[in-house]
Length: 228
Image 1: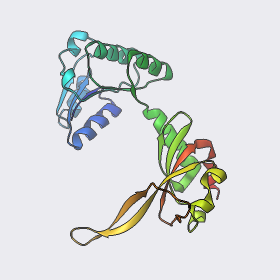
Image 2: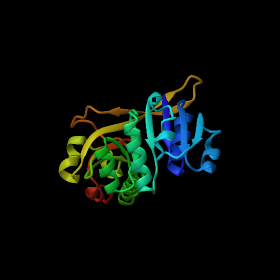
Image 3: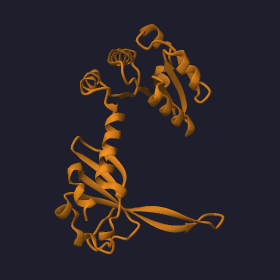
Image 4: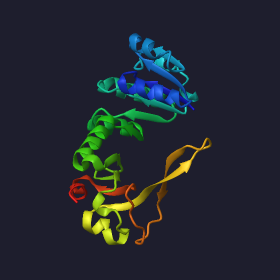
């Protein structure tokens, strides 16, 4: 796939390099020539130009891209101007980093549907980890109030059935899946751990020691799981 990454700061550069690493064609854009030079060997191409200049922006292959990612993290005006110009130039799918709640409101009003919120994501991960400690594995935001969590199975739950535990009544969260590990041998005979997801949950399923629990609910109830 083809991507245009506008803004080559820490986030933009990381996105561009990782998209390239997994086989995509990526063009990076920034007004800072030093940033462009530092990344041009790691991605398909890098261009120095002012994205608030309509004529300059129109020279880019906008309609050839599967997605255009705008990652400006500080300059509200530059981000909004760039996004507005991209929309006026009939650019395709836009993914834009949110700088603030006001900025997000503005770019949504322009017509952007997909928003990146790295600071908010970091805060959510950090808060979840602080609440769950060693149980924590991953956090995913679904709405402003409800989230998905992957956690290691608390030792107190090992050997109990899902029906006995009753996650909703006792902990205020819903169990939506269980990742269960099993050992397999690869092509050269070495043992490897592979996880499969049990998503058809019944009350009779017994939780095992190395299971990863996939939970849905509010962050403020997580302390109930960390305290058992």
